[in-house]
Image 1 (cartoon, helix red, strand yellow):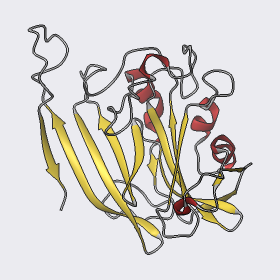
Image 2 (cartoon, one colour):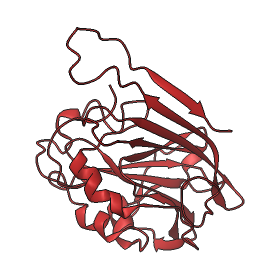
Image 3 (cartoon, rainbow, N blue to C red):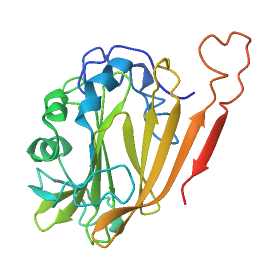
Length: 249
């Protein structure tokens, strides 16, 4: 299944969850390979104006715009993880919410809507890996909605001295970033007028590699999903989605 899981959304920290992730806690809607990106029409409309940026990167035909020099924010309340692998030394875990709140490159809308789903549990995924060639693990932060795990924003922070530098960001919902063999992979779904919440028209999967002190696009795959399947299909056919893919050169 591609697209959305229906349900009310009130931003990344919206109410309506019993466990902070809602009915999709197991399926993780919005995550590449483990489930599709998701967004309600309301959520996308409210966040579309936020746009997309790449900090410290030129456009390079990727659809992003140059935002100038990257900004640094302090490393916020790290915690030691004695089980960390050497690839993520020195084994510190950041406070992602504090990192986002102090980052001037995170939009006011994302900061305003970033609230706990329940208790102190925020809808934020954090991954650690060496993406930028440093000795210290970089931090990939994905901000989601609580109920449907819609990816509303994604950022990459590079360790720099005692602080973290924002070197990549996208706030064009629905969006979600993952790490694949040292590369950054960003997935975005596109909804055309008339699309149901469960079926996006298309999807872009863009791969970036760190080179010359910036993320450069190395690959992009655009998928146009079939309109022959979806809502109203009552014949019991459970076959997979049909798609046309076109990789970039």
